[in-house]
Image (cartoon, rainbow, N blue to C red; front, side):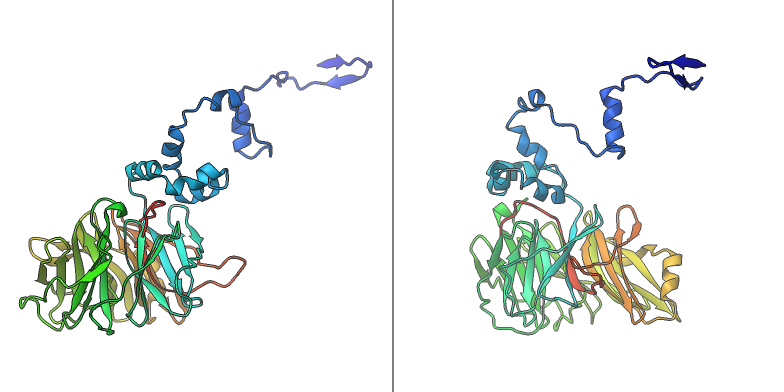
Length: 397
């Protein structure tokens, strides 16, 4: 079909193509989101100027944690939200997020690396208040706060890696510098009601720090029903369920627990599965789990067990996919659990290998973690240790 233009020239029109029509706003928006244009549609002032002021905090509290830090640069008012009591209340109403992981690398033990599993992204915070002349390691967490202990087992620190809230705990009354196991719980639903930290040594000495009193107390002595020495498994971090802390021990194999409210110690004799190494406790929804390396002949696999409350025996519930385990065949693999709160992060390494994986206990999903690379760097960092923590913007040490 031929058509004549104003200048008399002829143009060929496609027979099946209709004449161009004006696109709707919805279609224009869809085109922009798909990357067909670099322009962005401005916000309509006549719509947003009437947005209720009291809803800003409720909306921002529900944004992904990483997004919030970009929004802080919008204006001074949004930047001051961290100090707002009403914003803290909105954050408390939001369901608990997926735990993050605060880790220490072999290359730089004085700075941490945080992993956000929802975005599969590493962050590199600078906690200026932590001592730089001492090596401090993350040993426990609760309510968005991470508890650190220096490598000499002398000084404790508590910090929120997201908002830099920091506290150096007072000196312990018991001068025990041998290695200790550490656990942490909240007094209520958030850090505003205070928190407690427990350390316990193999000889049965222990103390509890109460943030409300800002002091260490000695609740009593280890009961005779708990066999000493404890032979604590220091590779396994404590597990907290409600107000009770659980520690893994050997000789006899099992678990010791301490109720932070009643001050009661208990001992449970639980035989460890055969051929198991590098095992550590974990928890998910009030269930006590066990993760470890199962090695037989030259084959190695990561296995997950759940503690049966009636029989006090471990029952295998899952194991790493066989295709992944083939990479371990014939290698001397070591495993470190970097977080044990429902979502586990496991560091698997040998002379020829360095792998990070996460395991979701509820969904039984295994995922590989991208390598940790410092900003403007290329070399992958080796993760030395770490702990899981639930990110909370308003938690105060």
